[in-house]
Each structure stands twice: as structure tokens, then as C-alpha cells.
Amino acid sequence: THYWPSDNIVSVTSWTAAKGGSGANWVAAPGTGEMTYASSDGNMGNQKSLTTTAGDTGLRTSTQSEDTYWNGTEAVSVMVVMQKDAQTSGSTLGDGCFVQTSNSSTDGSWSWDITGDHTWGGGFGEVFTSAASYSYPQKGIMLVRMSANGASGQMAFYDGSSWSEKATFSSLPSSLPTNMDSINIFNFQTSDSNHDYVGAISEIAYYKGTRIDDTERDAFTTYALAKF
Image 1 (cartoon, rainbow, N blue to C red):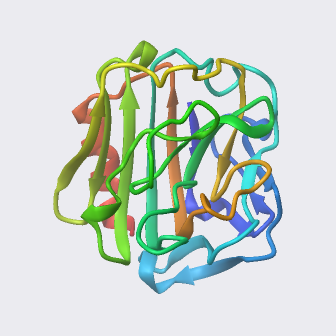
Image 2: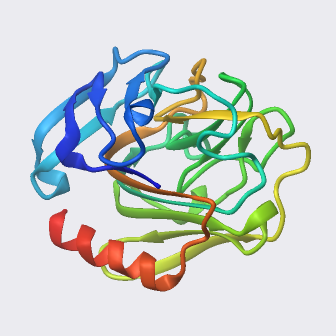
């Protein structure tokens, strides 16, 4: 339903959606002071990328309107071509790679990343806790997919040679809001220095209302493997 190819990255404030309309274009939020744009990133197959080091920087979809990207309960999937370079604090923090944003704010938002320090805490956070599984950098594809209401939920990572399942879940986090109105990448909407993503993102495929099957997963993987 939404697609952001690396080819469409122009600068730290201009990454247009190839699918999903102009409302899905990424814009600065909360800022881009620690973000860099590469027109040819050697770590990402000489394709374009955006990279952050740490701190109060990130992007969000131009449109902020409830249920535009996710209604908080429906099936959904995302695949992100990425290279995570570090955690933001020691070995336990850093989880803002892809964020379902609640009410245009940090509170209530739900972030997805290959590593994080805690599960959902009722205010904001992530559901995956696999920080101990990695050394850095980690280059590959993050997959998060789930049926309605979080059923058959899975987080997996493709490291260039095979898929590895990192976490599963069977329901949505308790008290997760349903007023999701936008998507953020690299950090939460109002920023959080303990939950920012450190590394590069080059391409994102997003499937609203669909838990993709392995055939779709593998088709994107084959494409991305050749490109990046």
C-alpha cells in the first residue's frame, strides 16, 4: 500500500513515496540535525540512504490523520532495508526504527526495531526484546507482520543469507491506543534520546491491512538482495 524506494531519497528532508500518495512523503520530525544523506552508500550497495548517529532527529509521514496508515487493530506488515550501527546507550536501548505514531505524539506510540530494551509499558515503547542477540553493525531486512489484533505476530531479520525469527506474539500490547495517525522513522514524533535509531535506512515496503505471506516476503527479499 505504501512504498519508499531508495531511488526517491533526495535529501534529509525529501524522501517521496512511490506508492501511497503525497501524504506519505517523509518530512522532518522532530528534526534532521544529526541525519545525513548519501547518494551512493557503499554499505547499501551504492544505493541512496539516510543515516542518523543519535539524538533528536527523525522523519514522519506528511499526513497526520487517524487510521490513514493503521487503525491500531488491523493486519499490517512492513519490510525495512537497514543497517543498524549501534544501540543508543550501552547494550540495551535503541528502538525507534519504524514507529506507529499515536495522536501525533510520543505517548502511546509503538516502535518496531530489530533490537530494543523492553516490551510495551503502557505509555510508549516496543514489543521486541532481542538486544542481546547482536553485535554491530547489522545490515539486512527487518520484517514485522501480524494479523488483526496482533494475532500471528512476528519480527524477523534477514542478514544477507537467511531469515531468522527474533520474536513472536499473539495479541497486541495491553492498552495500546487505536488513534494511530502517522508513521515515524528514526525516532518518535517528539523525540526520545533513549529510543532513537542509530544507523541507515534505504528502503521501506509497507502493507496496510495485510499480513504478508512468505511468498511476498521472499519476492521482496530477492529484489532487495540484488539491489543492496
